[in-house]
View (cartoon, rainbow, N blue to C red):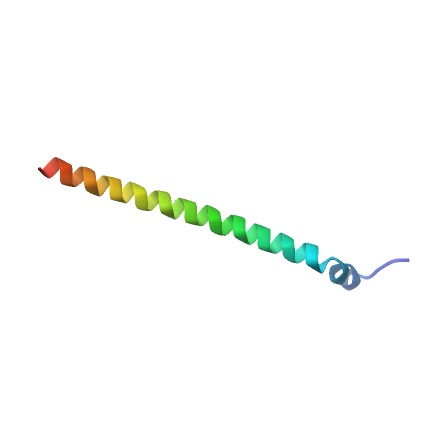
Amino acid sequence: MHRTLFDQIRGNSVALMSRVVAVGSLGYNTWRNERTEQNRNIRSAGFRAIDETW
């Protein structure tokens, strides 16, 4: 028996939502790690600039 696309999506909705959440979480964590690293670099450069002025 052939199932329609809608029936397949409805039957696999939990798996599809899990995939969406996993990909979204991975994207957010990657963005957050990059932002944290940028903040650390800026902070470190600021301290180095202060040290050089003294």
